[in-house]
Image (cartoon, rainbow, N blue to C red):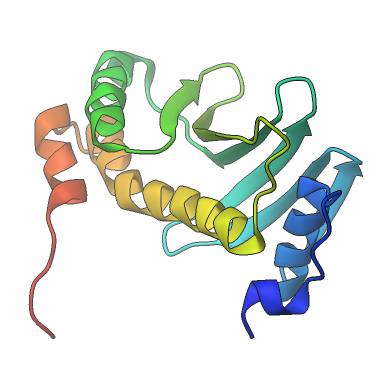
Length: 167
């Protein structure tokens, strides 16, 4: 079933209500933290990703934060930050950052809905999927830089290499 078919649209749809509907559609366990915030986990190939979406009426933005734990050795932080810069050059939507105090790798994206625009369920679902796909794509590069002591340029090749054909 298409997400939009199972949701009745009105002009006053709260974006977090849509996210809750999407979480239910995918059978993700979620926690409606506040009227304007929801959190859930999505299982990926490499990790389980913690995702939080929050609505800010002030700046009319739906913010997505996708995190996963990462504890890089202190002596590899410069290389990790260089890898993050290379990674962000390749991200068309959203960007990665590392929150050292929390030991979290973070992918952030903001969907601006100014002028009373309404995001559709497919748009929000795509936003969530793009976050998970980006985390999945670049996770190996972050690991290679921090634990295998590969250069950032070397490690990023893993993320940009695409397999062709069938196994």
